[in-house]
Amino acid sequence: MATATQRLEVTPPRVLVLACGALAKEIRDVAAANDWDHLDMECLPAALHNTPQDIPAAVEHRLRRANDLYDRVFVGYADCGTGGLLDVVLERQGVERLSGAHCYEFFAGSNLFAQLDEEELGTFYLTDFLARHFDRMVWTTLGLDRHPELRDAYFGNYKRVAYLSQIEDAELLERASSAARRLGLEFEHRHVAYGEMAIELGGFVGGHPGEAA
Image 1 (cartoon, rainbow, N blue to C red):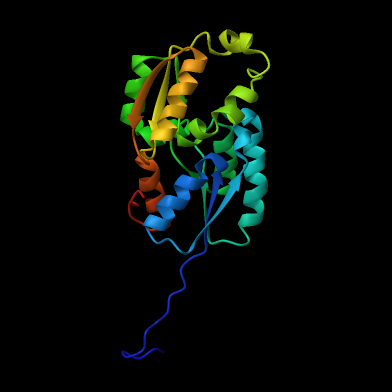
Image 2: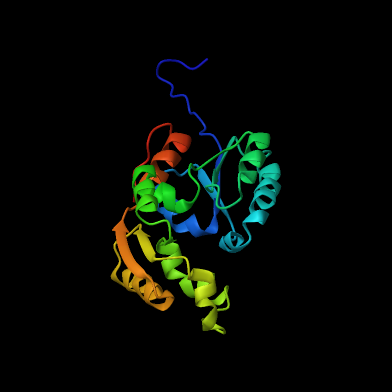
């Protein structure tokens, strides 16, 4: 038994955040800001967002292996277009995820996101990641680089682009504005930082709200 002069060394739990690749930078920033040295992160390809029906199986495959290696696992996805199928997997595995339907919602916060959605249902949302990788994730994937005439088929029901920025960066702001011009849509910018993501990660990792970077 340790004496009063001896210090008990407590080994922190092994924690994994299994995240969407589109959130990698933001999660790393939040982890660094909070000194979460005991947190590991693994990311699944961001391109899975183009085939959201594949997200649940990809997450479950990795969770089966992670359960033997970590004390706690948290999934850094929202529903992300899986129509509730991701939640079926997470309930089966006993794992929590970020709240909301999309990353736009937890970055904006539920109140602001509801306001934006009510103002204009035809809103195409960008985050820092999507602004940075618009060509690869949207323009090229949808074939608009080869067939720009398809723009109206994909975006004819949209009225605006809402850029929800995590960091204040002039280049990213111009990229987002350029994306709106190329899509022929109105542009709106809201700087939301890390929104509810840092709070939710902090509650899971550290037992208290985390700080944004």
